Every structure is written in structure tokens, then in C-alpha cells.
Image (cartoon, rainbow, N blue to C red; front, side, top):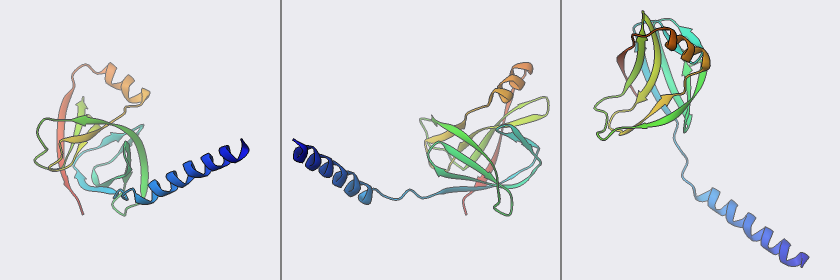
Length: 141
């Protein structure tokens, strides 16, 4: 009985190692943008300027400054469209001069990433009833 369990365990481990070796490496997605206004990313506010958005893995987004230094991170969820985006763009929710990064779309993709808003950001959005949407475009290096 012990031999059967040991052989089964070894077979499963071999299959896991073999499958891990054959999975394609996911490339890191990087989008460089110039955001012309102060904006919020997660719980933090940032001044207008040049930034990079990096997606090191699915449903996770990092914000980096113009020197590629890590400055913030958020979790994301998938968002989909029937037609692919014509350009790489960021979508912001805007209210009373405050801009919150909401979605990231890459050129020629019909799926994007929606930033999961924190409790603080949701509370702020509830206090402001008039919301709009702004977009800015970016590119990939």
C-alpha cells in the first residue's frame, strides 16, 4: 500500500514538473503614459507627469515613475469589449476636479483591466454625485 501511494505521489509530482516546464512564459506588459492632471491610483494621489504601468501578472498592476521606480500597486479585474481598442488608453473617473484611474486598455485588445477600487476611493466617489469619464493615451516601449 505504501509503495502504491509513493508511486502515485511521484507520478503526480512528475506531471506537475513536466507541465510547469512546458507552459509559455508570460511577458510583462508595460504601458508608458503622460498623465496631464493629478490622479489617484489605489489609495494614493500622484501629480501630473510621465508614468509607466506594469502588469507583472494577470490582475495585478504596478505604477512606476518616470525613472521606472515602483511607487504603487493595485489589484485589477478583467473588463471586456465587443470591439478591440483602437489605441492604448487609460480611463479615469472624474468628479469635482479629482481623477481616479479606472481602466487600462491596450491597443488591438478586446479585454482590459479595471482597477479594483479601495474602500477609501469608493467612499470618495459616493460623496460626489457627478462623475465623468476622461481618457489619456499611452504607448508601449
